[in-house]
Amino acid sequence: MPGSFESKVATAQIERPREAAASSVRSMNALERLLLPQAAGVFWPWGRIGLNRPLIEQSGLDPGDVTAHELVHVGQQQREGFVPTLLRDLLASREYLARPHEQEALEAEVTRPVRRGDIPLPDPNALIRGALRKQVTRGR
Image (tube, rainbow, N blue to C red):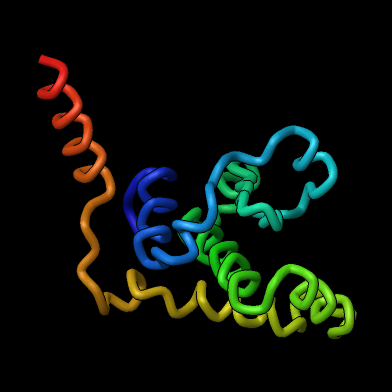
């Protein structure tokens, strides 16, 4: 899927507006990358999603898929609450990828509407350019 890193992230946010509204996406900081070197993304309970851009780019991962995956975790916390979500994960299988929350997030990557072509999505770059134009014309 062509497009910039940022436009792919924005597309995933457009696909999951409720979860996107309850979170913010940023690059993982150095401490997060040090503590979680193999993680392409991380969701924190206070609504922050961190993306490991160097790892995503080096691995050839789609940043939109990683963002969609983490947004599912946002939705899980919205639906179940932080403590029940944490307990469910801790009591689940020791195999990380076999945990129900991870299975749900992995499924979301595979079934993204943009991949299936089910919904027409606006070009995030065009939306950004349009917003910038509005700001420029207001400033005149």
